[in-house]
Length: 443
Image 1 (tube, rainbow, N blue to C red):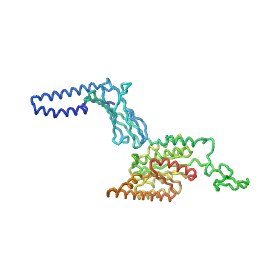
Image 2 (cartoon, rainbow, N blue to C red):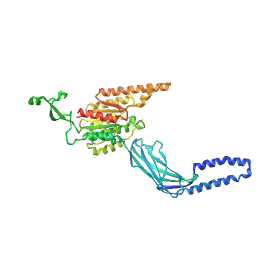
Image 3 (cartoon, rainbow, N blue to C red):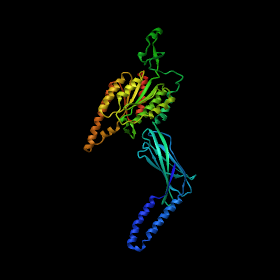
């Protein structure tokens, strides 16, 4: 619904009127008999404003185009189109009001430029969604002035449009990953995958350099020649990506919450795992479990994982690892690879996390993934020019030491650990997945 407002003076007109005020005072002081000049000039100015506003014409039609879907952290264009009667409209501008997920201020302005081939005006702005969810774009205002820039007209429109913000899948669409997956899948149907699995595939003549533990001594004795076993690489492994959605994971790193960085890395690795024939599930928790998807075993159902990841909520409370991991263990019927994305800020929370993970390690293979805290490292490297800076540096060094102690304890428990910058965890996770898969440590 559009609402038009009457003519209003522009900022230029306001400055001109303000400039006339001291001149009127000077005239009144020097020659009181000429006081009539002030009201005449004011009436003339009002007439110019009205005339300029009428010359601006009317807006015949205007639209704001809001995309229905976007991805967190990716620039997204919002477009506006308008058509005016006549050619007197000058400097048209659209103001938008939307959810702060799209921009911190919750508002943006865009100028409309004339199309040289038509009489339409168009403009575009890029918003950068910072959190997943549904972001409403509620209202829009269109304002344009006359050729003199003294009088302007304005119309308002209630949009009631929404933009769904999904997890970032740009790494999945990257040329590097697509090229890798295409080359890895070459001949996949025509041959069985041989590797270090436990399922017997064939006997091959032993060659120097082969693992001696693979020699089949009974077959070698029958044939009077050394033969080695070739096993089929195991597939259909269960992989669970578990997300801590608590307070620490909601903290931003380079402008985006850690949980969103983790979701992007997990979905990228999930796509690779599905292409490799394994089954993938997502599990999210904070004070209580949020999301637990059934296992997906086909890359064509990848959208189900994306939808489930989009439903992971941000929670400012501390996570309940005991409840969450006990729930996850109860739902898993066979040994699985559990990739846990989490972070910790104090020793007490870390102690509870270690205790819960320790019970998980007894039945499953656990890979703990955390984003390296570059902010603490920058505090340590900062030149201690004053007491406050020195204290901050010492505190950061203490926190990093506690962090390294916790990660070392996890490694001693048999947990594999990845600690890397946010822009590297996706690739390191894929590399570690292949190492674990080839070593047949899951099944």
